[in-house]
Structure formats: structure tokens, C-alpha cells
Amino acid sequence: MRAKLPAVPAHDAPEVEVVARMRVSCDGGALGHPLVWYSIDPSVGWIECGYCDKRFVLDQALAEH
Image (cartoon, rainbow, N blue to C red; front, side, top):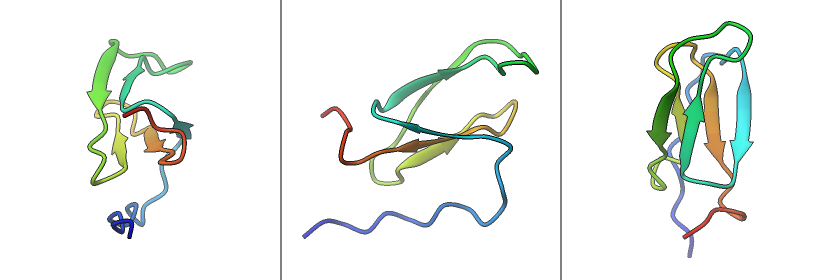
């Protein structure tokens, strides 16, 4: 039986990217900010950039182990 992940926050993110890796980077795209790296906690399943609020959602089916 697969554990249920916590819900994604109710507020809308300016951008959402579904990813297959637990380690992601963000540079703000067109808005621009310093390059930052994040690790998605698999028990949570997502993380948001502290600068631009872009949300990275882990696709559990494609995730590397």
C-alpha cells in the first residue's frame, strides 16, 4: 500500500513543474535570481523555490530511487 502524500498548499504557485528527480535547481527563469538547489522530500512530494515560489512536484511514477 502506497503512503498518501501531504496535500499541495492551497495557494497557487506562479509556475509548477513536474519533475522526475528529487534534486532540482531554480534560477528564476525570466524573472531571474541566484541559482539555488533543492531536494524534494519524497514523503512530501513537492518543494517551492524560496525566491520565486515556483513549485516542483515529484512525479512518483518516474522518480529515481
